[in-house]
Length: 77
Image 1 (cartoon, one colour):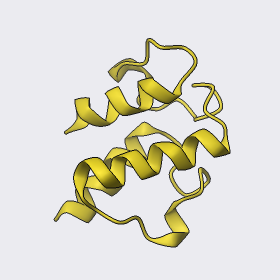
Image 2 (cartoon, rainbow, N blue to C red):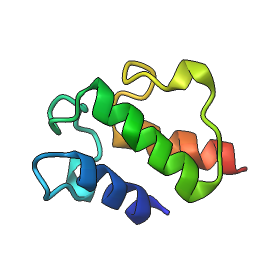
Image 3 (cartoon, one colour):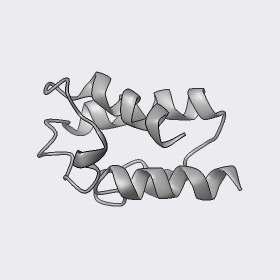
Image 4 (tube, one colour):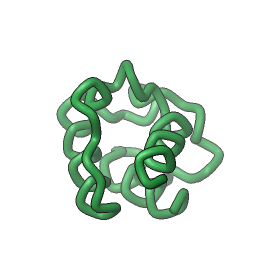
């Protein structure tokens, strides 16, 4: 699951080389703006068949991939 999320993030990052070593980088450091973040969230919702709580669809609530991965795990349980 972690790799699937990283692959999705990689599609929205202009760096195109995001891997696990970037797990604690901010979205800004990955080149992901707020619109790309929303698109990323929608793709994760569709891929994992989950719905993000409204408060969590802003980058400030999920500041990096680690927090995003942790949140998806929580929603799946």
